[in-house]
Length: 136
Image 1: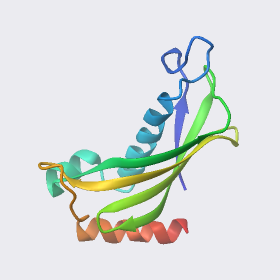
Image 2: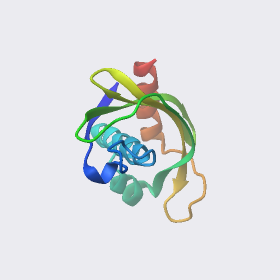
Image 3: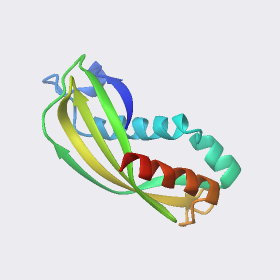
């Protein structure tokens, strides 16, 4: 499972010093982006070389415990499903092993120029399928 570190700053919190709920979306997005980069598929490369971008289509989030100012968190990414034009990713955010949030994110593959659904290019599809098998 891929893990990306997140530190909580003032800008991430509300007046009570608790992470504002919408900030978690940014943490999850960064982790997914770094996960793709770690596997050799940077977002700009996908756009420029394959006319491909990934966009969130749906997300289910369970907030379990709050994060606070200066917390050191880990945002994880695990690919659960890879279809011809979509992905399902399981994500968690933890602090010292304690689960703060879990999410299921459905991602659509789109043409970068037309923003229409398109198949994932075969070499990338094969690489992603291998990740599903490894995470299972």
